[in-house]
Length: 101
Image (cartoon, rainbow, N blue to C red; front, side, top):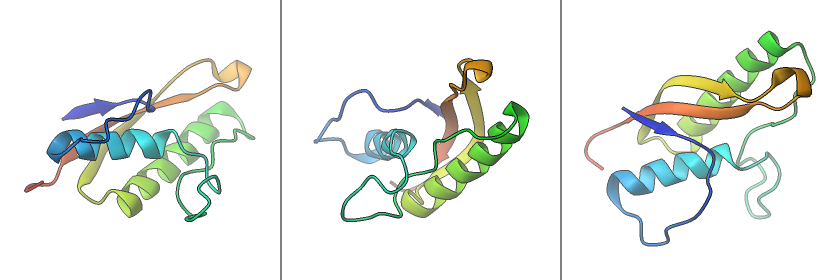
């Protein structure tokens, strides 16, 4: 199992497991409607509800986005860091990889 955080840099030569993990990190970093050629790519990052409800909704949206855009990754768990009282939730996702890659 691998833990993935939002993307900090891109390796254009990534292959195999590294490529899948990088794709998941890219999904975590991409707001919905921000990709010009694929407006459905990404997830809704706004938090406009109580923190426990927001965490559940965001976990569901992230799981659906990863399933849709990187089917080689299987989401095992979604964890949030950050300060919910200040409206900042940073997702981390634990995934396993479908074989073969």
